Length: 494
Ligand SMILES: Cc1cc2nc3c(=O)[nH]c(=O)nc-3n(C[C@H](O)[C@H](O)[C@H](O)COP(=O)(O)OP(=O)(O)OC[C@H]3O[C@@H](n4cnc5c(N)ncnc54)[C@H](O)[C@@H]3O)c2cc1C
Image: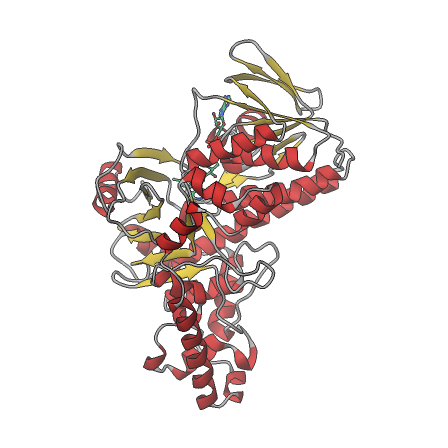
């Protein structure tokens, strides 16, 4: 494949930079891809839970699953367990699976709700990966084409960047170590090149800004406005700390536990647990948040907790002149649904086909790319707010604010459609499908006000039978699966 851009420079060697370099070198063999990174500055080094799209990315660039898991101390992720989000003491799963029919007379969730039969257990028991997660079991997929569920991974972010770096270098990516001290502009406002601290200069035709929160090109140089979401997503700090995992369960899921003014993550790797506390600094001070995180740990901390500061939102345009921002340089929502790496892949997935067309980018194509990326940030923003705004907790200022705030119009309409008519409305460019939205509504005990009259077309006994059968079939399939750690051990020993 050819491209109009013969010389592409990737700025930054975190997950975003190395994913971009690997994908670009694979898809555009006629171009030179050069990545510049600074060990002195380092990478953010968090971001250990992912979304199933990472598996597509790995397939596209030719990464073997076992090699990747071995290199990154990785584990499987079926989804997230949410603890204490509606009220303290209540938990639910959001996994990458389905709940059967969602609309019409066969909608299983509708019958589950209509029947209200205590013998049917929880709605989550109608979703295969939720049952796998609750029992700590895992089994790979028999087929990608006809999959019964989807999954992602947990991994060590530093090791993942190193793993991708090795692969990218094999694919011909050139690596330059150095700190960028100046950005040289073109007459039209675009970027011509970069000056490094040691005096070297790097020229390029297209620049991929993966410089993390610094947003060196898109933010500091081109001054692209930041669309601030913090009035809807007020968390703005995170303490992160690894802890010992000996004796802890190797859960095939991430855990997100709601706390006084935020939430704590627990991400199981093979050699340690990754932990963090994401919080809103306007509602809790840093020291109290740190102490709350340390109380959550399964075992002794392996390092001093590290504080990260961020603002939720994104750059208005991700592609400006000859600069495309990816990763933290283009925006950050918050890590509740592990969507940052997904957004990097999605950006690459939309960018690369445009570059492969082999002509300089017409304005309309750039505008379309920017519109898609902005919509994706908004859709995910709405999905994340959903987790907070349905809370019945009133034990902290964060929860009181989130339960009463004015929602984005797009989300307000979705909530209205669900409450009024049980419709799981989907817009274009959604990151999460209707099953995911159902998982959160159900988990938060948020149901439509009336049953769909179409459900009455199925006799009660028949509906009960359908729900029982699906639940029993899922239970039988899961009972035959190995525990997650046994599956992993066997797979990695091969
Ligand atoms: C608290 C927290 C939790 C998160 N959890 C998740 C999660 O569970 N799942 C998920 O998908 N994502 C998560 N993320 C996001 C995830 O960490 C990032 O999307 C991912 O690591 C990619 O980061 P990056 O490559 O954009 O930036 P970075 O890793 O920060 O890399 C930036 C690169 O730019 C280089 N650089 C910067 N300035 C210069 C300069 N002047 N000269 C040369 N080089 C320079 C740096 O050296 C570095 O190599 C989380 C983020 C935070 C803050």
